[in-house]
Length: 350
Image 1 (cartoon, helix red, strand yellow):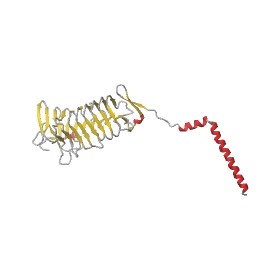
Image 2 (cartoon, rainbow, N blue to C red):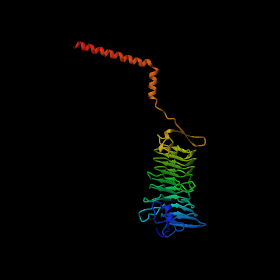
Image 3 (cartoon, rainbow, N blue to C red):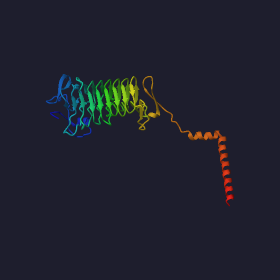
Image 4 (cartoon, rainbow, N blue to C red):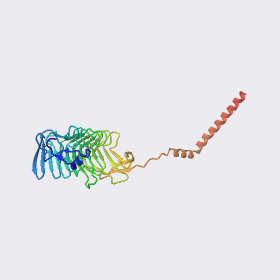
């Protein structure tokens, strides 16, 4: 990358965990503006910056701790940088812990994406990220937006992925030592994926008030943490609109509350699928699934139906002894008749 600051190995651990001991260059608001970068920076003072794209840009852009940044895509495309024409081992945008970034698009055609050789998705958040507008897309097996930070708020934008294996937006707690839960709030936007549109993983929290969420093959929302939904449209073309994952050995594993949402599921599927982590199985058919007056998802385990066919037949014979005796009498008379016929036949032919 041209004239850009080298990030030390201690930063690499967070940015490029899958490429140990490799020097990776990245830009920050301190050095993102240089000749040919297609980026301008307005220093607003007190570590507050306005960054604007003036053309399509290839950058590994970081927001550092203590910095508050507004990024205007301005109708252009921001793509992560392809190092040595072989790999792109960092995101297009990374918000570090303690950093704050707001992404907007004053024109409407601005895009954040990643190249095919990427190790990471277009955006990773470890701090505070607010997305107001823009297009966010990936064709790689990565999240378009991965949230491990204190807060990700999405108020608008269009989010798409073509991945056959990975969800579109991921809320995930990777650092188990942190006491803070990654929190995501979605107040609007359009989300389209082949797999899950939104994946709320273990030990995370999500609140959805609005938005349009579509999955082709799996679920519009897949929840393993704490989820509160008060609006929005959730559609799965081939499956249930929402999957809620539980642990039958731990009632506090996950929670789900839903009101005022529109659910569209495949014709042969219910609106909710239930997956039990304790047995690693889909257990949807084992429960009657309802919501209470407060919108909490209620799972009532169904009583297994036992096979009583043999018992019914035995009871039937005992309750109808004359029928059984009649059959025996008929068989006995038939045997006598056959024996007599055989005897007559022998006499005639001896």
